[in-house]
Length: 243
Image (tube, rainbow, N blue to C red; front, side):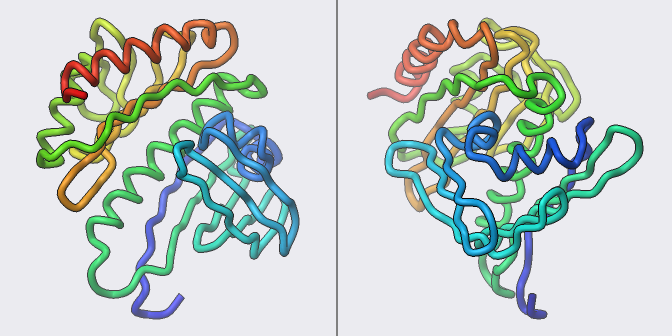
């Protein structure tokens, strides 16, 4: 990295082995249980990782470093794995390649995003390891409102109060504790209902319009609630923001 480059860095401690964390970031089926809607991995140096969030949001990243249980690098994202204490592993995610000027909004978005995804990964490995995920989500079309207004309106739509990280929230739809609270970018945390699922509420950035979205990870038998929850999210966001 040159002196003019900046980076986004997130570190999280997970009650799992380095081998379990490695599988979660390097196997397609595992990636789908905490990160993207779909994923495929062609492993090893010179291989690639393909991921998709649906609706045309897919990309493929060449693998540049492949050191099992230690270090994975794909494009400008590094995953560093280190055993720390008995039964604990530290995962450090670093995204680099940003110039010295500009990028402020992008860096803020990425920082909040990686914190939320790292929290989702920890929740998966500590509470639902090995279980397939039913990924329930609704992305409303972009709306012509300031991002802060969209964020506040989105939280009201799903009846989630804005609380600080570590504090509980409770509404008609979701009950849990905030893990990441980064207004007006995102809000996420584990749920006490929906089979101990995980909710990720975000406002995707845009120049003049911003896109409200809610993503919920359901595991095991709670996946049967997915269709009803998806329709509920659609109805609530459509009612709040219009067609």
